[in-house]
Image (tube, rainbow, N blue to C red; front, side, top):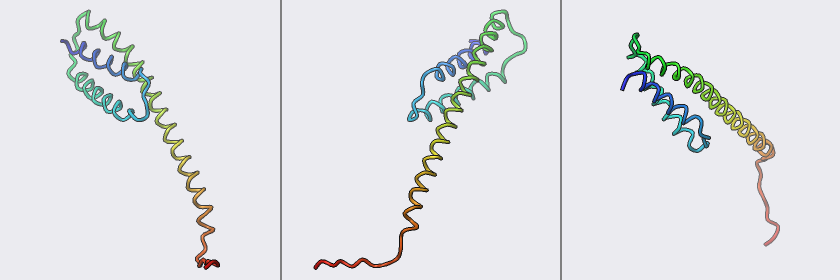
Length: 116
């Protein structure tokens, strides 16, 4: 299999992973798979020769279109992660504010039980 065909296969796999809806619980595993495929692509790009056949040039055009789509989908994933981080931070701040209200009321003292 030629280097261009392997690049096309790896890019297609990346796009397929990104097209599927990613649940929060499984996001880390999907990102790990994408990183592995991106590393493989990087290695293949470095071993790519400058002379290409007509078939490889046709696959290269397809590869460019898939690469643009992969970049767009990766950007969307990044925005989803940023939104989740922002929401988590806001929740944390709200919980801290709620806890702070009751921290100021804590007065050192004793409790006497009137019943015997």
